[in-house]
Image (cartoon, rainbow, N blue to C red):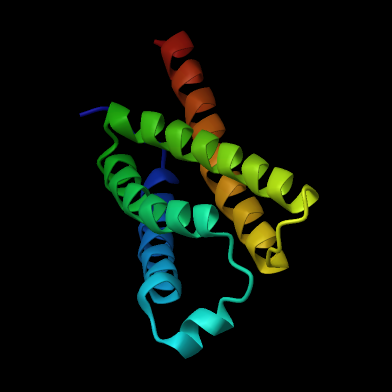
Length: 133
């Protein structure tokens, strides 16, 4: 087993919780009652479906990070970049006049930043570890 950075397991637990909450919120907005769907407001369907399925990827990524296997770093990069791409699509749609919720912008900033910070920080850790070996 490889030596994991001390921060990886707490971050993995947060990522798993984040994934569960993302699945729950997305599932409620997609499959909930009419009142719940109405409360979602001007949700952009592409972003809503992406975030719902991304929640499952968050859990898989969290397990890989917690176990400190190479998949964890790859998952963090993949999730972060995919979030960034969907965020760019959301911005483009908003600029073209598609109705959206500002809270979705905030959520996408949080999701994208969270995973990209993990990916960048873990990549730097791995580079330093290899150089010192």
